[in-house]
Amino acid sequence: MNILFLNGPNLNLLGQRQPEIYGRTTLADIEAKLREKATKAGVGFDFRQSNHEGELVTWIQQAPGKFAVIVLNAAAYTHTSVALRDSISAVGVPTIEVHLSNIHAREEFRHRSLIAAVCKGQIVGFGESSYYLAFEAALQLTAS
Image (cartoon, rainbow, N blue to C red; front, side, top):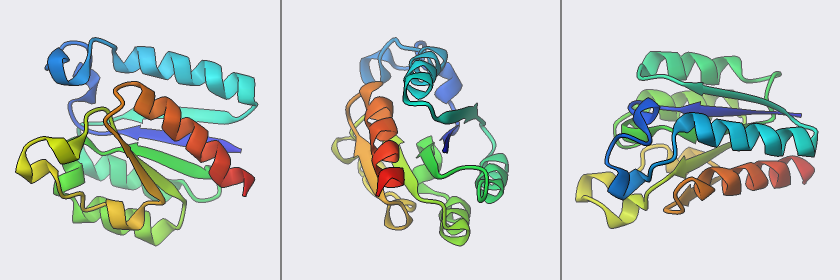
């Protein structure tokens, strides 16, 4: 089994950008911990980040047959991207939406996720642990 982690715009700045909201952990730190978890669980793992919506769409479209689950932190595209929503819906790979901050407790424009309705579930507000919880959820999805 393989899990694809996709990260959207500005997540490459984790650890520097608004640490009072996102913490000081970098995306590379999160990836390293997830890689350890994947190795222990005996699952394949790919971790990518892009600031470009079209690249994220392409990666989602390429996932069928390669990945059993997608874990997606679409970042700002969560609230704006019909293209991401449509690609998730089209490919049929179970997708878990993840966010470091609680998007429902932030600015009003962040409360609405365009991708939530086509995802298996949403994990928000637990900082870097949101990713680790999503990893566990991905394992559960493939076990059922």
